[in-house]
Length: 217
Length: 217
Image (cartoon, rainbow over the protein chains, first blue to last red):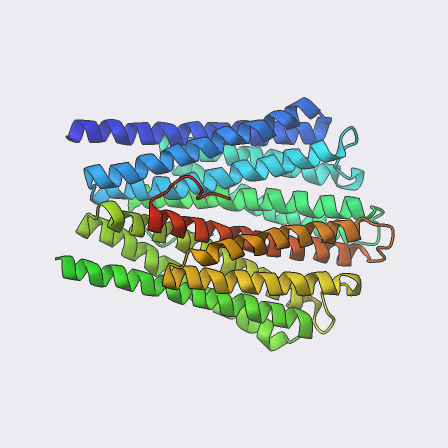
């Protein structure tokens, strides 16, 4: 019985790894498409989001079956409940990468990035990619050391999000309404991406330490 | 043992009811504050969001304890897992109502609503309030009939969200960058509010029928 359970838990962990890996690919490609107007890359992110959604559903069903059939307690139970939460956050991160790719696709062949904000978005693209890579590290290796640097990148995303508003609402802004809308929504997607990354890291913290107090962002 | 479990499940249901009730209050007051520039009402929504967050944490701990101590199966297990999911969506709905109230507070004593879009936002305020009331009905009475009308209001929110963009990106738009940013973000908050409402209804459907196929938005 225990052996079956261990195998099931391992499969659960592998599903989470796969989801986190797909999220790294999604945000990396969405960022690249944003900078290079690569339409096929944007299309790929949009199509691949279905794979993330499918993994979430499979993982959910696996969790419910595990709870029903194996009746886990203590750490095992924490793993299953955390997996449910983490998969929901990873699924949202995939959605946000897709929204970023959809913005690129809509503007194609033009760039959706306002020239005045290009450097700010480069910062966001890099920070969100690091967040995804650290989420992958924390999910796959339970390395809680990574969590602190992840929170710093989330802070950076918040700061860049504010920078976007400062620029858009400043005297020097020459963007039209479309550019203002794009700047606002893109920035919001990156900012939320960081929030979900922190949420995953905190839930992993709960999973590993049992400390329930810092799970929500 | 069964008696204790029944009592625990009932307490879980009551926590969800309380959260859903607070979400109805939050979105109603946030909408009212948006229309009337009532600063104290906006402040109240912002302050009350902490109560929703606290209920979510309490409910989560209750669920984990229930899973550990009572080892539920079948329908009981579905109830507990669904409660975990539903509380996460309700918590996000509270956040979105808070974001709407924060936008009102930031613009005070002016209105954050651009005059050109006032009617569109009145539609969004009404639809989101109906969504919250139906979420409350579905959570408190398990009335799945309400779910269909809830999805129609979510469709309406999506359509109004598109209307906002059509206006903002149209020739007649005279708003400045601040108004464009506000219009974009407010609209996005209402649109997401509807999505989470649908998500709650679909999870209640899963809970009541066991049909796992239509849970995600």
